[in-house]
Length: 84
Image 1 (cartoon, rainbow, N blue to C red):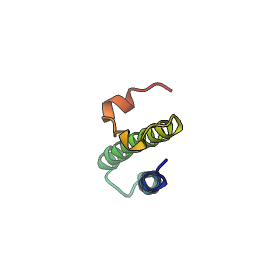
Image 2: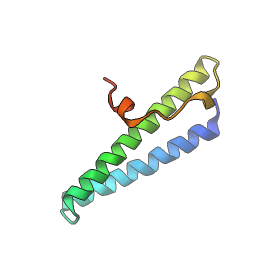
Image 3: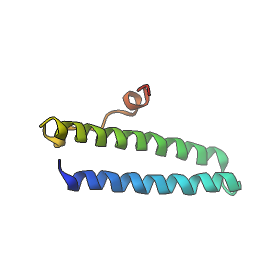
Image 4: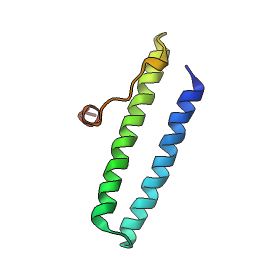
């Protein structure tokens, strides 16, 4: 598994989680345009789902002896259509 690429993905996830927390706090405080903030929050959530999916793909490929670099960022519609 390529630790560098996975670390970069995790770093991006961490940044988005922090942005999500700050945005939620602004929404809760009412100090922002609520509609715009909710749209931005929804976009961050989709990007987070895509990054987690990419990281899971990379880890699975490495686990089964495949090249993690073959993992691809899937379209938002596909990732958001998954069931838990």
